[in-house]
Length: 501
Image (tube, rainbow, N blue to C red; front, side, top):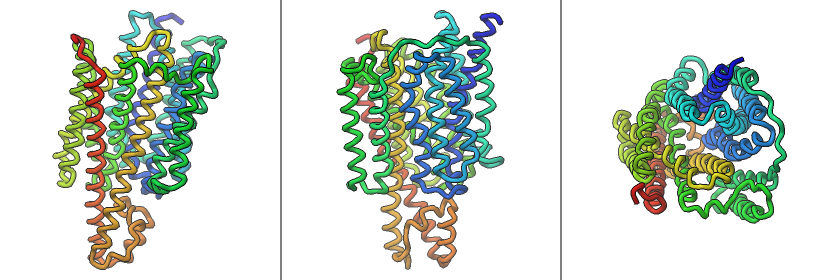
């Protein structure tokens, strides 16, 4: 087998695995309302279905890179793809919400092992003067699938089944494994150490923080359990900081934050990923409140992903010429505008009015992601590049995890409070249990049964109250996103200078 053929096999394998992850990122959210209806799960469980993937990815993404160094990228890549495939099969046959949560957690672990080892395989397959082109082809095709995700998700959900979102993964994954096994020889184990203590401490710290944020709205934010998990998370983060000095190859190097650009960039990627998670709630809102079909909701959501293909190259070129500051300011300003537009026009319930906000969001993310990644990772010495990249990716997915938790908490808490108040003030509805009707817009069986007992005028009032309070809650959620965009804008101004400065 020629070297050229081997290189192409590796590239095709990386394109297939990257496209798989990108496709699932935008395909799956469109199916969430249908999953909620079919499996009869709460909004809280729905958020765990998303966050289980993000949580395990944030935990294992550093480990994936280190394990690839220790045991060989080929072996860890195949392990990651295999886990992703097995989890996809499990998810496709899920009968309960928590079964799906477990499947997504395993899927996230597989994705975390797959990504860094796959990139290492691609880098080693091509000489230095060809790597940029190879990576560019991979990212371009991956971005295409990212944009197509909402369309495909809508089509699967409406015309086939949401389970197809899992069913398409194993064949593509198997193809990737076969190509890598043929093109890449076995590699020997390296005599390096893995910081297991630091890994477990950081893993439990992120997990405890996520549990506190996700369950706080259920347990109560001042309850003993919520405060315990917040305190335990803080203690474990401090333990990781203390353990750094004793580890030969520390899992997490806090000393890297002494580099101003690196610290600022890590703050920005947390903010960016936090804001990006509002896209999880778009299809839910479009289907639940505006009563669009999954296909229509997917098409609307795609308006926010298509600009990624258009503006990502422009952002990269602008970063090369002017530095990171200008594109970051443009990007976060567009995101601020997008959130503010959503908050202002949601109550009108006219989808075309939201198109500018969707487009501005996609453009804003495009102007943020390229400069923040390239500038942040270029700011650290080459000797620390591996751990710096791992830390950056962990914080990236942690920001996404926190985003789902916080946006979800705001949505649920605001909606519950407003809906309860509406029922208290309504005509003959003061004695109704608001929790019985919270799933009415999603046709949950319990809510449908409760609705059957209501006279028509009361049912009409309850439905209208749910739509109004859901819309207001989503507007408040977008205001929170606007505040994060403003914070990111201020961090950019504080930490990043223009190229000429």
